[in-house]
Length: 248
Ligand code: SF4
Ligand code: SF4
Ligand code: SF4
Image (cartoon, rainbow, N blue to C red; front, side, top):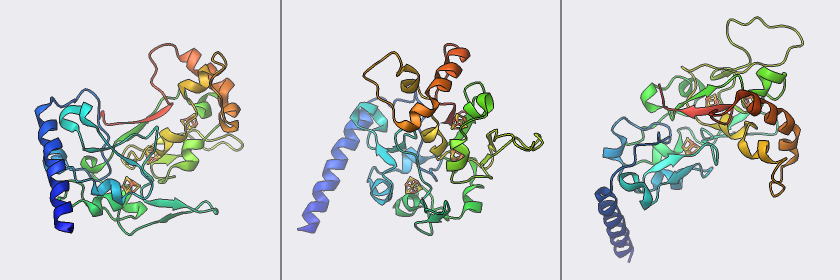
């Protein structure tokens, strides 16, 4: 019975894999893979879905057939659900690992995702090949840099004080001044938590004009400042103020 179920699953994946392979791959957008993806990820990934099943935070999504050759491969969309680096934050503000290794890589049967120890000092030093991406911060849009406010990214970064620091290394600490987020590119793994929490989003800026957009209390707190920074920065800015990229 189980054998028949497995065969059916293999057949299903085989058909969709063959169909997907016939379609042109869409390489126009940079794909953020789960942590640990090798350079030859696409050749190794058998589209089995084990990484997605293993993720305790539902951070991993799968492309559908409209993605052509990328169909049924995993990706992270940090604006919807970031990668939590298999850490759970307690009420005391401390992160605790939910497993000794990042669960997605540990579950991958082909090594398309490598296994990475779930230790912050290891995570902050993974090679460039295995990062999800790296975050870039636009100071023109950042409420901490512009208004001495916010700091959500800094407080929520699972690699706080390694990947995200409270000020650039060459900026002296001034008593009473707020944080000035600074991304250490070497240490950032691209989990996207900062992207997820950053309030500089389009819908917040639009909420005053569009009555159908309802803001949460958290969003209301920043709405005026968000409108100002986006307005001042002019057209063509990319939101949020901090975002993961693989352009390096
Ligand atoms: S590292 Fe953990 S939280 Fe992040 S995608 Fe993998 S399983 Fe999910
Ligand atoms: S800076 Fe952002 S993307 Fe980088 S590790 Fe911290 S939260 Fe994740
Ligand atoms: S969350 Fe966004 S606006 Fe707030 S400090 Fe970080 S980058 Fe700046």
